[in-house]
Image (cartoon, rainbow, N blue to C red):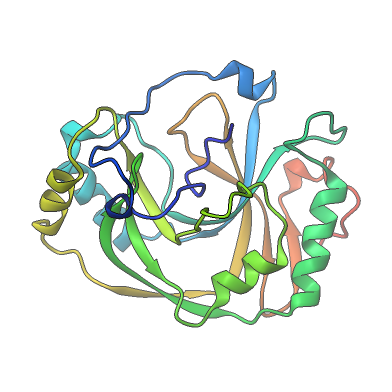
Length: 238
C-alpha cells in the first residue's frame, strides 16, 4: 500500500467508473508498521502564484474535498519508501538505496529544464493541475531513478500537482464542470534547476512535506539538510 499521490493512473475520463473515490483522515497502521515518515523524490514548485491558484481551486471544490490539505505544491517524480538506516521491509528506503539514486542522477547528467503548469483535471482520488513535460526532463529523471511504482502493464505516470483529495464519491463530470468554470487559471512555465527528496508524516494523509536534501541539476551535486545527515552518512555533503 502506498499513499503518495504520484501513484495515480490515467485521468478519470479514461477509467470505467464515472465517480471519484473518497479518502479519509486515518492512520493506516498496517501500512506504516510503526514507521513515521515516507519519502519521495519531487520538484518543489511552492511559489506564491501556484499557492494562490491551488487555494482558489480548493475553494471551488470545497464541499467535495477532504479538509485540511496542507501539502505544498510539488510534482512527485518517484516514490522511495520509509527512510531508515536499517531496512527491514520491502518499502524501507536505506542509505544504500539513496546512494544509488544520487549516483544515477550524477551519471545521467540531466540539465535544468522547463515545464508548463496547465489546466486542472482529476484522478479518481485527487484533483490536480496538469503538467506538460515538453523538454522531457521529468521523464529523464524517472528513467534514472528506481522507484516503488506498481509494475502492472497498464500503469501510467501522469505528471501533476495535486491540490486536494476527495472526501466523497461524486460524478467526475460535475468536478470537471466546476473546474472549467474557475476563473484565473492560466498556463505557467516553471524552470526546474533542482529536485528534492521530500518526506511527509505517514499517519497524516494531507500533511505537509519536508525536504531532506536537494540535488542541483546544473552542478550535479547534492545538499543535505543538517538535521537528517546522520541517516545519510554514506553521502558526501556540499
